[in-house]
Length: 113
Length: 115
Image (cartoon, rainbow over the protein chains, first blue to last red):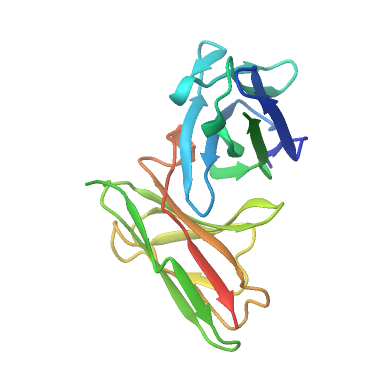
């Protein structure tokens, strides 16, 4: 079975500073990894994904994530955070051959003006 | 305007009643999903469907039922057997499903409250 862990409940960062949201995964094969963002009382919006190839993936709104197979991590990063980045961020993993998409519990990001 | 639509946005249910949450997509996606979201627990998979007339149980299927009679529709029924149904329910669809790494598109959610 696949699973993801998002170890921090909340991430606080000052506007303009780098933002990192951590995600580690556990699968028995090659993973497909995703990041989504959720604003209050809304659905999730896709940010980026890793399927294969380059370990550094660039996505929407200036976000990027780095796949690290040895550390089984897929941390989300943004060089300069905006107040509008304040939201709930979810990491998710799917396993080739298994159609289930497993989500982490989410990280609340608060960007302080 | 393509997308995935959930209705209603808010739903109130009396104890002992069944209620059905609607999910419609016009993206021509094969796969559809239902998730339940509770504070601090992330998203948990209730049911998913890879193709019309086929669906599989997720991690928390007890007390729920689904149908997939049309490609664009995947309604979820919350039955009286679901002991704690108050939650935020999210429907999603994807072109080929997580199996091939295609991302999911989510509806805006239905907040169900038992009164």
